[in-house]
Each structure stands twice: as C-alpha cells, then as structure tokens.
Length: 225
Image 1: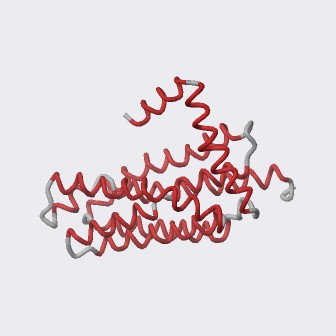
Image 2: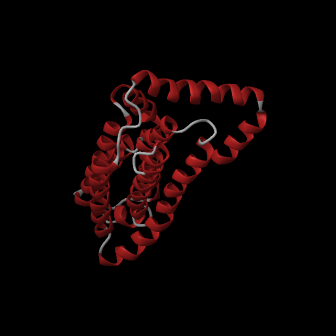
C-alpha cells in the first residue's frame, strides 16, 4: 500500500539515501585529481592546503545559515538550491581559466555544500526518536558509499584529462537535482515543527547529553581527530 505512512517514510529515506550517495559521488570524483589539476595552474602544496581548507571552512560557516533557511522555507527548497549551486560550482571548476577561479569555484562549492546538514534535518523531521538512529545510519551509509566510489571513479576518469572528471561530477550533480526535484517531497509543512526538530532536538539536547555524559565528548573528539 503506497499510501501507508511507513511506506511513504521508507521511500523518503531511500530518496535521501540516493541524494547523499550521488552528492558525495560527485564530490568524491574531484578529490583525487584536485592536486594534479591545480598544478596545471602553477599551484603548490600550500595552495592545495588553502584550497581544501576554503571549501571546508565555507561548509562549516554556512551550515547554520542553511539550517535556519530550511526551517523557514522547508528542507526540499534548500536541498534543491544547494544541489544546483554545487553543480554550477563544479562546472565553474572544470572551466576555470586560472587558480583564482579554482578558488572561487571551491568556495562556492563549500557555500552550497552545507546541504548535508539539511538532509540530516530532513531525516529528523520524518522519524521518531526510536527510529532515528537506524534511519541516520542508513542515510549515512549513502554518504560513505558515495565517498568510496567517487574517488575511485575520479582516478579512472582522469586518464582523459584532469578536467574530465570534474565535468562528469557536474553532470552527476545535475542528475541529482532532477532526481530530487521529481522524487523528494517536503518532510514537514509546519515551520515551527521543523525549527523545533533542528534546534531543540539537536542543539539543546546535544548540550545536555555532553554535560551529563563526558563519553560523548570523547567520541566527538575522536571523530574530529
């Protein structure tokens, strides 16, 4: 029965799984060829370090921003905007005429790369506290699988030129946008409900867990390291 709430929830989680898998597939393709790609612009190891840092820093900086926007507009619009932005940043990276434009492309990619936190917020909207760990694990598997397949595919495709994998990553991201547009439904129609899930059930509750259970902080430290 397609109208069964459990079936609707399973299809939604499968869609998020595929979205994250394809998203990280496109991202992972770029990872192994980026050091060689920027060498064609005369870059060195210092430039590579700054380039990698700029992407992650933008992701870190703007995740709360996209989270707040997703509370107001909904998870689906934010995911669509970020996937579109990621595909355009990859296209710009493939067409970059200089190292400056490579940096611009990666900074934009990091700005729009905060969609992963929105995807997790989407899962939070759909699930109860009892269902959440299992659902998060399933969706995270899509994240990990994409990051396994992507770099291997990027290495294979780089034999035809370092910008070839980047073009393909951009097309994969566009495919992801089409998939999301047609198959991803909004997780919650109530702004207050979305905001309460993201803020109260994550930030506030996480602080309480860390305060009452120091082992959680040890685990977070291990992940950071």
